Image (cartoon, rainbow, N blue to C red):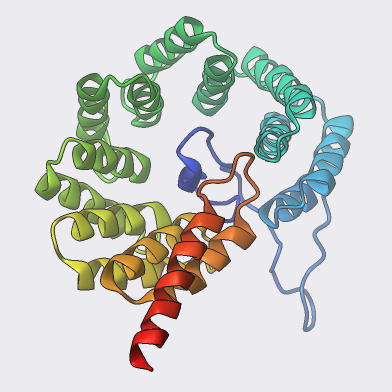
Length: 314
């Protein structure tokens, strides 16, 4: 998802807020054919960031801050890049290195807030870091302060709802999201998260409505597509669910959640070869420690069933 998006990186659970700044001039035409060079360190940083090249992005954001230490956009993006690099390291089992990146991200978010106390995205991301470090009361206080200061925005309420959801406080989380959506009815993140909560509470019709609202805002959002697919599967609408999963994979062939859901659905439907394919795809993508599924066991069972089927035919 490109950094110009206001949607944020919600496909990773809304733990962080994406870059919100435009990549100016990245594809503007100059005096002749071709692409205009990305001339400023900030824009080069956004370009690298949008491609997932975090080391290069960080170097460019640092150059931008050398030129202008008061550039809040560059400092927020630098913090976000450190934050993402920390998440990647943590997911690969490198806890010590991840903590160093998170500390760097926190330092930069705090600097953003020193210069721009009303920067709600920096406040939300800093609260996420505090929460993950175990300072949950501090995180909630920070989010409540952001809500009080920005009562018209869905974002801080959505962030608080995520923390309440993680704590198992589903009704309180739903209340925050309903309040957020009274302010911004088409907010993507609030609708997706509300869909998750309603689905967990088996309020399937309401969950379906929340996901469909999200998809009206962004028709190809993987989180909304897969959330709605799970609702459709749970209510016996396997064909609709399969179509939604296929759409998610058309948007992002490397979406781990989509491959896992596709494998599960194909296995339940008896399409064992398709299930095997998706488990292999998921296994290749899953860099988590521990991994998201016991791929060896799933594949062992599926291959045994396939072999049994071949034996029966003979």
